[in-house]
Length: 459
Image (cartoon, rainbow, N blue to C red; front, side, top):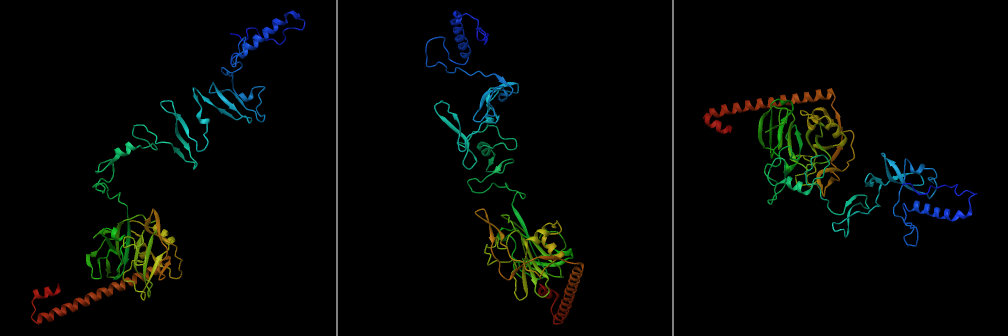
């Protein structure tokens, strides 16, 4: 259908037309205007109405770029355009501002929400089932965090891909108060985790070491949280090693020959070797590492050592003043205690292997740097209070923070010679004791003691 019914012609009527036809031209023009405007407006052919001139609809003509249509005012201050712009071959409702920035409002048969934006702290709303009230859904709150008005209901299917949400039913279905494969063990009414629900790989533990070259008493890392210690000795040369709760101890392994830890703590070493004891214990994961060294004031040799990611007071009462170091036989007239600085510890940890533990490295490859003292900086004790690390704010003045220096080959040769001399002396002492014992037994036999009685005396 052609609109208007009488074609528009700005050259009609001609200047030579008769005046008597003017009324026809006027009625014709009114009809043309009505037929054009009535496409989108209420425009009756006669009479009056409050609705006259109001829109019935808005019909837009598609354009590739509504801002480029001749006669438009894009670029004019305070001017904007609403039109139908081509998007993917189809006309979509488009708003263009004075800077010719387009906002596509529709997308196919939908509103283009990707181009919408809510004010901060304002909910996106929906309508309730009865159609009687609005329902708040979610918003970006005043802290710029996405906030849901109520808990959303997720799909009933269990999540099976990364970043999919796990709902309450899924978590409830995954929980179990008994040890079941592919289930999350939780405490039952007993207040305990299910039996067999935590294996050795899941238990959060740490290891710490102590070492010594003579009769030395130590506080073991982990204290009450520790398991039974494992032992080894340097060189694996069959040296006698006695460990126990006091200086008399008990001999767990008369001849320690392995150079790696095995399950077998005043510690007593003979033959000039270094003995080690490792303790695995339940830990809260200290953020710093502690290495204490017991130094002979005269020789400057390391005669005792402790290393662990926790202070020795951890698991041993927790009092940093009462348990300020791990050495039970510390004598200020004979010994100095060194706390190794954190920079040196980081260097040592980078060299640790299965065969070379921290203390093995310290004892075999380093010596204390006695020429330079370092200021103490608070270190994590290993314990957390309200999820915050508890720091050891200070240490006794007799404990010095120092670094370590690598042993030169000359240093190692001197050390090895010293160990050899100690071992020779120990062997000579054994022989002298054996000779004295044999002599005493000979004299006792001469006095009439039987072999059976002598065996009783030996025990």
